[in-house]
Length: 129
Image (tube, rainbow, N blue to C red; front, side, top):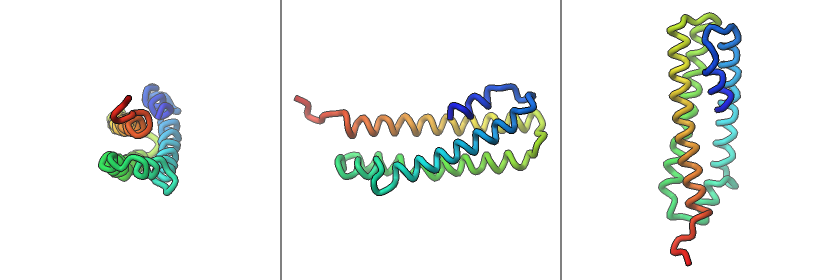
């Protein structure tokens, strides 16, 4: 996410902008795919949360349900990058950047909800004392 954000922050007119954008988006896709496999697997953190803290089932399911739409966002953006080819107009590049920034926002919100879920599952002592 950090690399893609840095790519998007560089000037659209820079010759390497589009190549860097493509490279960082591919890396983001690979990271997202690995994340889904890791957290949703039988030994993943979500399985542990469900086993240890069943009261968090709804939140686990909501977080898992975000994965397909996040992946679809990456795939759609990759397709749009291919459609514009190697020399997008400034308007096309602007649209790509805006869509990528929206995707990064959705990924950041997902990451924050995941962090909150993990905190609630493992760091909060209900009933305290």
